[in-house]
Length: 86
Image (cartoon, rainbow, N blue to C red):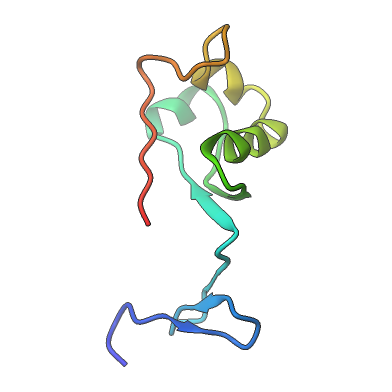
């Protein structure tokens, strides 16, 4: 198999040839170095079917992030960008 080829594992999750497991029900959330200067927020995996569900989970783990990411009306701040890929 070539590099980057992923195969289903015995439990149906995607398994990287190097051994990493990708859970289709989890999303990888990463934060910019600029945001990490103000709030300790390492990359993490979060469950959710929508961006709102994923962010809600992230905010339960890192409550201080909420005010940096969302405005007072719970909308994404203008200076923030969400990037999603499949």
